[in-house]
Length: 257
Image (cartoon, rainbow, N blue to C red; front, side, top):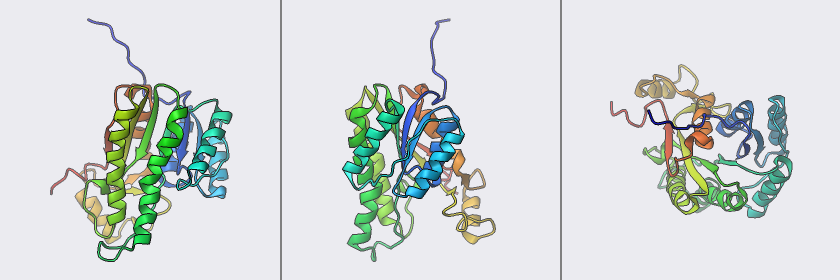
């Protein structure tokens, strides 16, 4: 038998920045990385959440830094990059998990709302890549957070759907340009319970029942169930994976009936 080598699925020893990492799925990824042995800077605009999440990272034995950022401001992202380099000694992994949403119809959404969503959710991913890619170590990994909305039509989410579709297209484009030094992939969660939407997806609600019935796994996801895909894409086990979107939706998108 021919001998071969493979790398484990772990981020132990990695140095990571999670943009939008102080709430929801982004926070779950940041804390998951820290629990796996990575040093992690979790950043967002909310100073209180940055401090709270940093304390949780430290409780897991990881190094971190307390720094806020605004993904609409390139200078702000560069400050985060510089702090992460200083505090962690370098950057191996960047996760772009920031988000924005507007629940207006195609007919009613204003330019202001459209621009707000796309500026954060799509242009923000571009800015994160531009700020961090030049500073990342060879073999580094960028993981963008997309959504099931990029693949499926959902009422009253035109800007969000367009932005997430753009994230997936940008991921493929960046993967081609940044290879072989860096890998760029995306995770596309389905319906996920977070502290921000737990009332919407509460058991017994009509919306929850419709989702559970349509999903082959029979339920919505806990945000911790998205972490594994991000860990894999950030790990050396995915060293030959780039330009891919990993969908984590319990089979929802591919279930016709």
